[in-house]
Length: 316
Image (cartoon, rainbow, N blue to C red; front, side, top):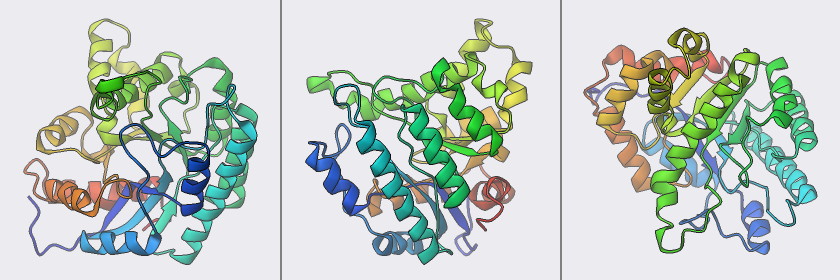
């Protein structure tokens, strides 16, 4: 458990921006948010108050689901590309305006391959954003599919960091829609990462590093099942595990213990899901982490900032 008087130096890798222009443009398309949630109000100024209240020194912002891809006649490519660019310009401006408080992951118009590659080049090479956000699926399309190999080649050439965030599965739930945020998003993280693993994407592009939201969702358990059924050998997983990081967003003591046993504290990074989570929920997430009895002082230090510094040397 953390001592109350210890100074916090938390770097939050899982925090979302919700730009006002983005919300307006999505609502014009009839999209008020992902399943179960409407877009909340957000601003950097409001967000920084939450950060200060919870001992968070810096956040690496990302655009959350539903992203920029609108499923109209197979996807509106022009809309997705233009909105991704606008979001990335906005993220770059936040970094410049508040350099001590914010980094940012780029938004991409996935699954459009050419547009995604173009935006990777601009966001990482020109805007100097800190990595990209990749959803576990987009309209039922998964990143591990063969046609997206060129995207990972571009990321590999830049030694990029990919923030993996769950997306809703395109199903009609009706009265069972609560299954999406409670169950399916966690399952889809495991499904998507297992697909990247079995399609040799993780091993074929060894310079790409990944941060998996919410402790990796079901991925740690799926890895164990894959080993049990001889779908992967431990030595194969060992070759890639040092490039997989797992954030603490919305975890708890039992899951902290499980995650520490699975990957060790060297692969855990701090996250809150701030922006979409209310200030009260962020405070609860931080309290659960700070009062965990499964981490010692060295563990806390590693998770809060040292592991992030290894990933992002300039985000200290």
